[in-house]
Amino acid sequence: MRTGGFTVWFWALTSAVAVFGAVVSSSTTWVADGRVLELDDSNFESAISALDLVLVDFHAPWCGHCKRLAPQLDAAAPMLASLKNPIVIAKVNADKYRSLGDKYGVDGFPTLKLFIHGVPQEYKGPRKADLLVRYLKKFAAPDVTVLDSDSAIADFVEAAGTFFPVYIGFGLDESMISKLALKYKKKTWFSVAKDFSEDAMLLYDFDKAPALLSLHPSYNERHVFYGPFEEEFLEDFIKQSLLPLAIPINYDTLKSLEDDERKIVLTIVEDEDEEKSKNLIKILKSAASANRDLVFGYVGIKQWEDFADTFGANKKTKLPKMVVWDRTEEYVTVNGSESIGEEDQASQVSQFLEGYKEGRTIKERVGGSVSVTSFISSFLGLGTVYVLVFVVVTIILVRKATEEEPLRVGRGDEVDHATSSTAEAESREHKAGEKED
Image (cartoon, rainbow, N blue to C red):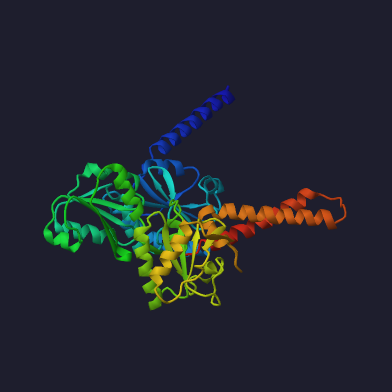
């Protein structure tokens, strides 16, 4: 009888604890209080679904880059929490909670993901606290900001910073661009100016309204669209002006080209900062204005020697060199326009483009002394590249073993386990290095 009573008592107590725990768990409220949240597999989905904007740092305790990033996130967290639409910073030990890392495609440390209403996207911005805050403000801003004075326009442009292009619809109704503003919210700032003076028209260099102005503050470029203002034509203008006329090629800009289907007219120079290179870049911008179906990019051997080398350009090559690249492992040169001389470069660029469009091209393979992995991974993802490398190496080893090694008897599972464990550790350590700021 006592035993039965104790059993009933124990069952009741256990049930009460379970119910209490469930109530506590279900009543957890997530707030932006300026601290970095610690998430794990028990509360991650709850936090992500409850908060509108969350920047998640998938890290590992042993990762040196993660340790250097942590103080920057700590400093940024209170600034982001103070926004009108606050942004929360959270972190997950993805080395411990690997199921979360696997679910969200984490293939190295640190990996930053921005969750917008529960939907993840790769964070491609800076990692220093002040710059990180300026970059992320874009995602907390309204789809379209309404400006009612010259000073409001100036304040908006200054607050937008230099990370994203800025679009201002002078004399446009908000409803005309609201749908496109939502579609391209992750890539640019949108606003409409209801009231503005002739001084503003002079400052932004347009002579009538309505007009849609695009600004690239970091490249000191602006473009004006006077219509027609049907959605189809507006979107064409927005897509074509998202990038500067001529874009310097580096790791970050390659990532920004991921969603652009146009081919790249790539000009390789010795040094981007030389005066003669700057003059050629001006010519490339003029060519880009007349050939919006192509992306015009340039790279200096001094700035990124390994990348230039994969297109057969080095210090011994006659430069500048122009190629057309579709971001695969193939590119084309134009017969008779393999390089650009110093005289009348505008005509030579025009001849190159004419030859390309007429099909007078020579197909080449991306090669060079350095593996193409370093920049193709920008499009395929590091995980895919490492899997491909692992498969190729495995096939080579298997073939070699079957050709040269006699049959042996042993516990293969032990060997396989040891090999895979070592490979996994080395792979994760190497991938962490790839995430270096």
